[in-house]
Image 1 (cartoon, rainbow, N blue to C red):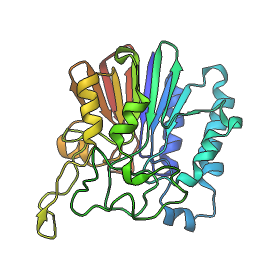
Image 2: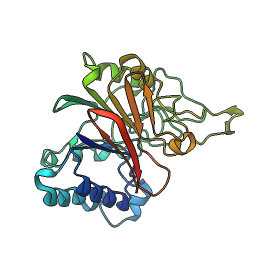
Image 3: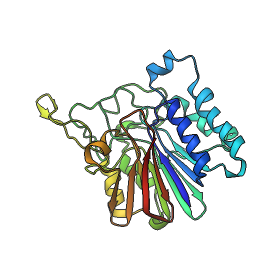
Length: 281
């Protein structure tokens, strides 16, 4: 059962075009999108196009017309660079024939349970739509608290006491690890998948941690052992570490982000991840 995983496309039309061309050629049964789908806010302001209508929706409408019954099942979350103001568009029932939006949800796909979770630990960036505390209210030097910064919509919960750890516990209550796939935006902490280019950098004379993933997500993977987890967020990690996947016992984890203008696709079999590979287009 062939699957594609992509993340951090950041609104680049060339990446969406290449992805659709590859889907037409390979005809995977399922495609996972790991967030950061939109261009930057500045680029959206400059553009005369509506990213959602003119690029994202148009490409997948055309793909469905061409592939017909071969159109893959698509599962989507957003990421920390995406405006939460746009989230309702992905939930709209008129688009369910094109994709399933699964942030903070569990959905069934054949024999699998698929979980989506878009939030990341605190970053140095001002956009806090998709940020909550990780396991406590501690924030790394140089990062901005989730209670500060800016949001495009009201978060709808008490951000001061929300954590990734609590969210995951609630989302996965009673889940079966061996039949579970997870679509995260954040990678797990202190791994090959969350290595940032922060070497020899300081904030107020304090050295910055070069690992910026989620402690809660790493603990969850190590303790609960889901079958597959998919991640993005840290573009340069695979270049720095030379790795785009990592094994945690029975779990295989991928990071599809890339720090170039090319498209990174991770191609794998849902029943056998041994032959997983990454293609750079």
